[in-house]
Image 1: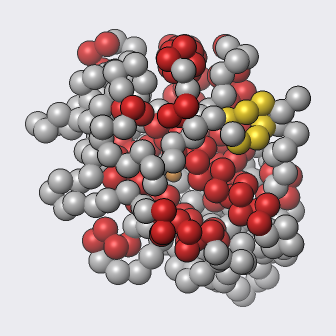
Image 2: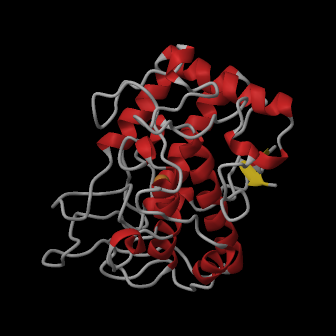
Length: 288
Ligand SMILES: [Cu+2]
């Protein structure tokens, strides 16, 4: 039977505790850092002339769906009652949200070095040392709202615009795709400063610290954010049952994205699954 992913704000305190305990156990065993490593290894930008399956690419959504499923499976080996909750950042959009409580994700970073000082993932607690970061820092960092260059979380109205897209993705199948559900949700846009970061990208930027860039998995809120991104894709699929994954066929020799993106039936590393195989999650989980 399919299990349920819940809104994090609806978790009981016992459920919050169980989720945190399973995450800490994955960290202790070393498995958590394997997930961090995978995300860093697959963080390929579209300026790089090589295959990219995780970001700036049509398979952004199926790749992260599979990544979350693997993480959730690892959590459920530790505690079969745990699922990955989702963070609806259009509603829980301030640092006062219960999401950032002492018993859950912990709070903002301190001003001097952005180090998170509260909650289960604070470095001083001894259970959350960053192994694979972008710098030498060993502690989790956050910088809510980027006070030096303020940014707000995406609004419901902005998200509604994304949900009105009717095509999955468009050429050139990268961060410059001007329409299509995938890139409007992933959130690469023209402009300057924070304008360039929309929807999914904007949330990474609003949390700040390690949530920026390839090492973002070091912040456990990564999973709650991507669970909501996956929910949005799932709802969009329901609303647009005939709008399948694009492209269906690989770009040909001479085309700019030749061998650089995964078409519908091409395999995505490190698992070897295709986007087509990730389209229907209904037998595994559902969203409450
Ligand atoms: Cu992300």
